[in-house]
Image 1 (cartoon, rainbow, N blue to C red):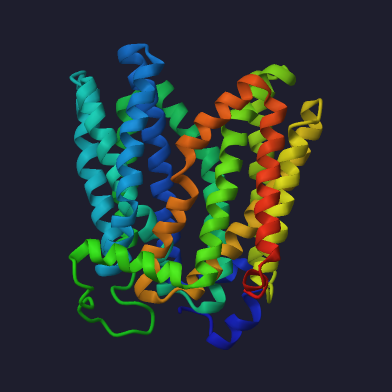
Image 2 (cartoon, rainbow, N blue to C red):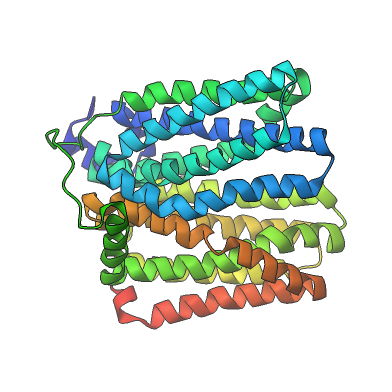
Length: 419
């Protein structure tokens, strides 16, 4: 690592999250990741606006988003296996290069006025494929480029930046679309990923402290065998298995309550419409940012399992309270408090998984984490919509109870408590 002796790192990493920026490889990863997030938002805003301009149909917009979500979900495990087989760096470079090669011509088509809907469907599908390969690689590369003591500060910096781009990315993209049109927003996406490609290219070719070598021969069965091996590895480790189950249950409930229930509350109960929804989501984001910063400053707990149980219980109670408070202000305060737990456990949890997972399995385990988090989201939305239609308070209470039951079951497990 550049600029900071290892002994000094171990002393200051827990008190100063900015220490990780002394590492040149981390700065390159941070820059490449940040640019990719901005590029994602440029394309999302441009795609949504362009589809509505061409068709005027929300149904068409929904179908374009589904075309993107399906390959992302189906290929996520393939992306994780490929990151392990080749390297996270090469997988990121390949997916970012493909993105540039697609979005550049797409921007030209839009600017020239020759874009058609079928081309947007193709582009959306390729976006999903790119995401499926890029996301596990980006999450699994950090342990290869920084010292072990810097995992929490590194993940905290990446999480805080992610929260910031959720605010700045759509705003910047909206300004570009309003001022110059959707074609230039797509061009902005291509520029972000092209510049990000350069930063990722500067990442070390081999893992930190390891000599460059040929990829190890995988198990029989090719890439499919690699995926099966990843499943077996994760399931055989009681800690990783427990974390995956908790993530699946908690995110299933939280995504349903927040994705479907929150807009319903803002509109029907609080009478605040889009402004109120923005306040609620913004409060969650502020809390999550504070939690991530705190996790980057404070040393990780000795027992991660107990922190996971407490954080899940905190989030479950918060979601239940949001569903019963009568006005916007206490709901926003509760959302902010719940967000603190989210930012904290996300930072510590990813660092714990990265530290626990064998380096040869990093990509596959991270792809399983993302699949557990996002794989049940369509079902959660469908079920939550039906419950919210009948009683939105019941939706929040049911989701809160499900998270609390998950926390209780995890807390009753001696294996989880000892993690």
